[in-house]
Length: 512
Image (tube, rainbow, N blue to C red; front, side, top):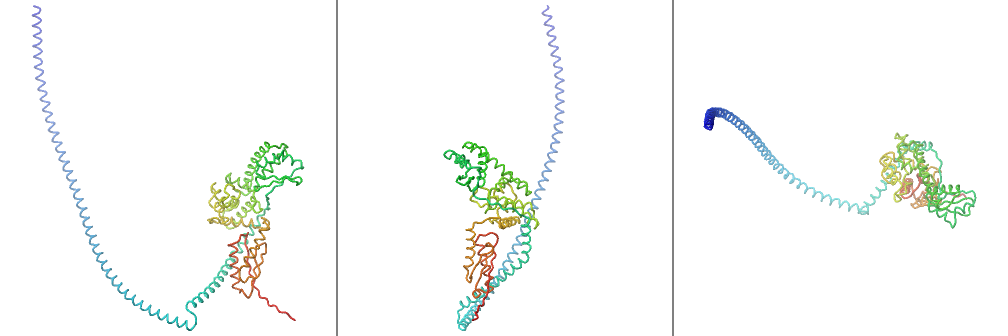
């Protein structure tokens, strides 16, 4: 009974559920159909909108394309018109060229006819000229070539004489304008500067208190003197000269090192090879410091600032160098002062000129470039340490090794010559001095018509006496000019040489 009740209840539940599902499914299907209908309506609307947009886009693209085609067609039309115009111009030019060619052909024919006429006339003139030359040769008794040579020689002599007169006139005018000012400038410059000439030799004499010290300096079997010579590079001569030892060497700095080292060794009393080497090294360091200090003092005295330390050291080395007996540092300082004064007189910067004057002989104390002239080596050294181009050029050109590019270069050259050529500045070996005077006289004697020559004023003037019957007044002017030019080209001399040609006529009779 209970089972039957359960079955009936279950059946009723199933039947009820089935009936409920059927009712819900029918409502759902109705709702779905409604949604589909609405979606179809919206799709139609969207489709119509898209179709309209597509048509509008197509119409716009079509319009743009037609516009582009029209522009292209217009450009093509313009180019076609331009080409037609160019073609018409070329045709016109071609016609013009043809016309000009015809005119040129006509002119050429006329020129040919005229040329033929000219040639005929030239032949006639040549024949007539030949006949006239033959007649002149018969009359004068000379051939045409001989007459031409005589005329050419006459013209040469006349031109040479006129040229010499013209040159003398120009030189006289230039001297009138420049000599007074130049002489005044140089004299004032020299008068403002005065220094003592310091003469350096190849030997240094070291004085000692007594001759007993000589044995200690020589040492056992000469070991001390050999050690000293090896350390300093100087030959030490110990002879019978009382209370003195000679230090011989070409390098003044080495001689100074040897002198100072000997002084310390003799003062200390301890003289042996190890001590010698120690003292020499110490003296070298002290001398390097002294050279630097000397260079600085020279620069300060001249008012020159900003020099590189290596350049200052070389300036200090100038103290121990000489040129023809003239101390190089004194010469450089004197040249610097001369340059400053002369630059001030002509309106240039005196500081630049003074700097160039101090450094112009820098190459004489540079030992690592022996093959180069001292002006070139000094120029390269100054250029290496960033000196101004005007100063570098003045250093390199003061002996005319390179071309001068500024006014400071001739100032340095002139002041260098003034400092070296003034009386007492330099010494000259007697043999070379005498030989220079002999060469000067022999050079003038080699010219025809010269009777005697005299070199006077220490070779600064050459007087040439010529025969009055062999040389006339105009030829004496030419002779003076030619001798001066030959001296300038072939000889080396300080300053300048004045050439004076003397021509005189002497009439001698005797009363009996």
